[in-house]
Length: 421
Image (cartoon, rainbow, N blue to C red; front, side):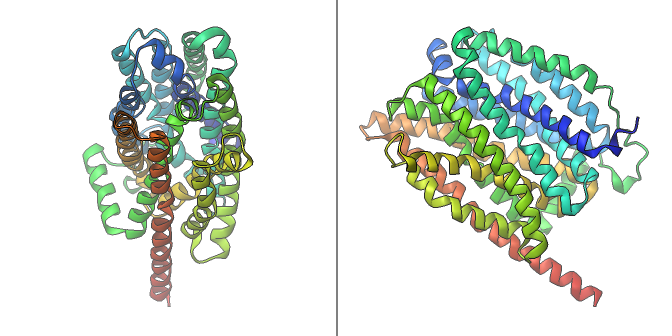
């Protein structure tokens, strides 16, 4: 069966894979109070666990897996990744201390690194440009759906069966899915040399050359990284709400999960659909759309940090923070894909994931935990609020880079028209 004739079905399968990956990744956040307490993990250690541990594996492996996906079967690369992260999710449930949890999560990240670079490039190949942003945004619905499900699991099933058993069952589900997925093949060896990627080092040189020579690409990647400064906010949200706002851990896990599920998913759907329409009607394209979207959400996101817990403004700001990053994912990756050759579509996403994980996940998460502990030790009132507000402002600054990228894209389009005329 030629499965490429059914792009909608391929998209649904990839979405299911992404949901599973995000659940396995973020269920640790939903259980953060319980895991940190049982394993005696401090805030700085927790920041290290959800930050540098992840980037050391996911970031670098995403770049490597991206080059493999540009040369070989993208479906087989994905299947191997599912197998790896599922086995290690089971292992996470057996961790007895900080060091064992670090090792297990390191390997979970290694497996998950295979999915996004291969899947985004596959969708870019299967869908035409005018539908590409919508398709990729639907794939990225896996982020809010997975995060939402992970928090819901923590607040419901996890509350009755514990975090260890939850990890075990999630890993088993992944293993059951990985086997049939491995039978979907994609033979890239028959493609012409310019249509498939080069070996790792030459491919990375080509990617770096593209980033250096195309300012619009560079600005889009920087903006994409800055938007993901929202990740530390999500990672520490439950601890912030419990420690500084006095809210119940299990109750907030369920509420965060439900709101992330609804508004993150809406963000992905609306961002993809409106982004494609905006790009067809306005010269600023996807970059201009993202800059405008962030500017609209920014006031609510800032107000969220100071509004009374449980107030309407509090929840509006929380929902805006869940909505905005996911609304940007589809348009940003679509713009990145459109600025490079097809032979490096997986590799450029892997490169973007590397930068995202270094700066927005590793450095930022570690810094949030460490700075919060430093401020608390020196008597600062509401230290988490101050630190998380800073990460929000960094995420909001992405609008500037997307606006600059939009101007560069317009310049490229004018230059192309000039050459044609």
